[in-house]
Image 1 (tube, rainbow, N blue to C red):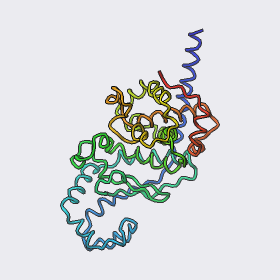
Image 2 (image 1 turned 90 degrees about the horizontal axis):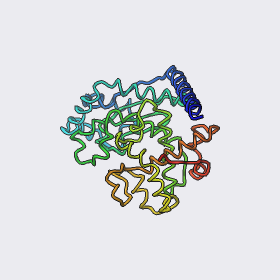
Image 3 (image 1 turned 60 degrees about the vertical axis):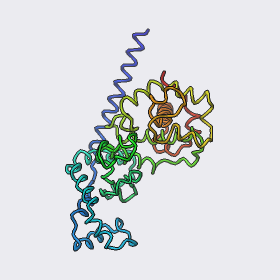
Image 4 (image 1 turned 30 degrees about the vertical axis):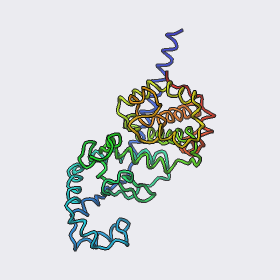
Length: 320
């Protein structure tokens, strides 16, 4: 009997892998019109005489409230010149990042038949890392100075738990999350459960759209952090249940388990071992369980479904 169960399980696993392989083959055939416009380079190389032409080509990048004299001083500023040089050094060859973006857009076009490739422009923004990616229906901006590598000296005064995700390979991950936010609808985010499932939606979306990235990369963990989250999933869930945190509206709770931090705050000895944002990880597992158990629900319907409905229609059983 046990051998029979193992055999059936193995057949299901291999059939699932083959289905996934065929799906990815179909997606790989989709043509994408992607043209990377390196505004960062164009601006860095501009002369005073060339600035008016650049402003005509990229009017949305030049505020009318800022006089030309400011842009001219920016070109001459030694710190800005160093920034341009460092960006050009890191992204002299943009082919790997471009391939990632191309594959993301292939997946978006496969799952959303209304998706149109935006105008794609690279810029710099003085390491305003909270604004590293901007996505609209027609234009996508990526500020490359936020992706120079975790150890870059530009990031010396930024916490390490943030800069560890300032790598070129993180560009497509952040883009996928920005698109996920466009598709997600969840106005009620007052409880820990609401927040967990909201971020779980974003992570599940990334799972579908960038399957070529590891789970650790999708959530912004190291492999060791992901292993800790996986191994302690049941204990974390029990902690939330026993302390009745799921439906709490205490505004301090998201800062303990949802927002970026060096570790999650259980106020126990395990705190320093844990990765931050563990609530996001649990939310991801809840959404995955929901989608596995509700095959009739497609990706975009799930992104619009309330947290309560997802939770009520999920038999979530954390890994032990």
